[in-house]
Length: 358
Image 1 (cartoon, rainbow, N blue to C red):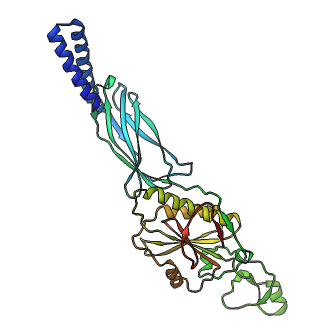
Image 2 (image 1 turned 180 degrees about the horizontal axis):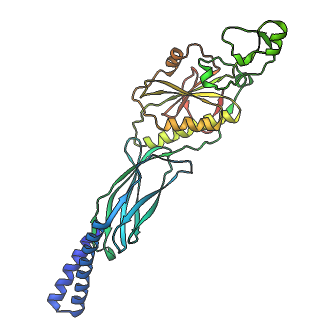
Image 3 (image 1 turned 90 degrees about the vertical axis):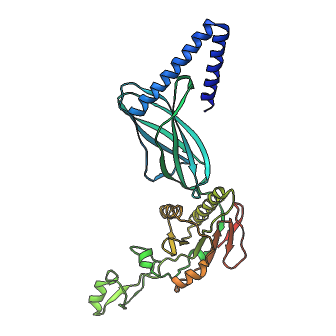
């Protein structure tokens, strides 16, 4: 718009100088400017009739450090190349607030489909929308700027990076054989504390536990006692309450960073745990067992797709109602306001330097 206004003002000045002073140089420059405008209009009409764009519409994910490369396919059905194309790129957070913006400049060759590569970089973590709009064609020397149809919307996930936390785990917690409802689903294939005991068959034992040689020798059905399943002594509850602040995207990004850091730090000291939150779509608690980095990645993928809720939930009571037979050593409650509550203690600000006893 500024270049267009400048061109119009410059054209008026040249016309004034040409008529008033009968300047040959001003007349020649005026003709050159008019030819540029005519060429720009023709360039626009040509591009509008031969340009076709294919935008990404699928979910995009990145495990790289806050960077997402993407590609737009641009097809030019004409024989002449088209240059001077630009588009505005906006990165929006989950609340549709603008996080950052940039301009993508590109050109395409004639009679071919050209991939146009762009890159979005963010210092924040979470689920975002990349919105491309305001496709424009600039005439030579940017004398004119013409709008073209074409917008796209693409979702991208920026995964948080773990930072080291000072987590102190007691031996009684690390080797606590917790009882949990639905261990067969949580621990497929069986993950049990070792034992060498042999006992008689009891209702509920698996056929694979039967010791066939001893059973044939004694005439009784004897089984190997697999022991108690490995427990999840630490429960990490996440209070996914809405953030009504100007820096909501920054605060939620810090919340995600603290969540993955806390879980990863527990993995580092070989402490299995559950990460639990309230799913607003299904209207019940979900819990993810964390024993490996792969399980932590799956958990974060699900967490990035969750929606925040307005009123806080009583997660402890919900968990007791849904899993009444579970036992544990420590409960931690991490909130989106960046406070951490140790079991029944009062919440305190969560920082990278704090010591977390479990």
